[in-house]
Image 1 (tube, rainbow, N blue to C red):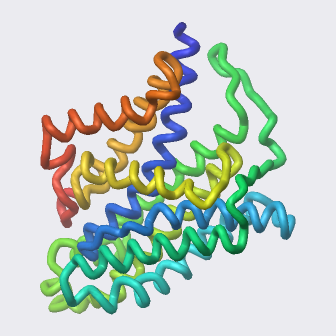
Image 2: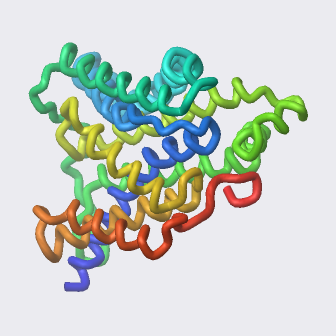
Length: 292
């Protein structure tokens, strides 16, 4: 019983780290640009397809492919900002909602057109290797995923707290007009924020591609869960989003192991709903220069 509990907690941390990487990008975009990006889940989906194409078709080393996916996200993010967000931002926020929803549909159909609707499976060299720890068997692939996800989350946190870019981002999130008076260029910060958010979501998809089935719709559920995480964690709160993501992953894993996988999502969303009823402002207040 104890070993099963440890195993489910470990699996929950793995799933939660995936949700955290995706939700973190969504949180940053909302906190800095004030935009709810409905296409964010599709960035996760594109990352999974891109790593599959690089590894299975071009035979690129999986580790190097992860770096290429992260770099592709950094390049694709600014393009999304310039074409989808920036032209509509001066108007009502509903315009950016509609434009991001349109982008979501376009990217899903793009994946179907180029990769087909059939599910794909990615195998990496160490997928079958297992190590024993406290009486349970853990695949090397899962250990690697958790390690890289935690490194990315820690690196992003350090970037936001200790670098000039992080300080500029927090200043723009607090008040873009005041930040502009201090010499910060809000549009550049907006572009860099979307680039970072896209890279994180795409890398999350690439990391978890060997663990799950790849199809054009995997971004839908991940995106929905990311929205729930951001709401429960507190819109714009980095700390709240990470905490809520790990909590969701653990709840899902425990529900799968001790109740039924059929009710996993229903149980997880019910608990998140209860948490939101108890604390409607979210776990942590919105992003700011002091509370981020």
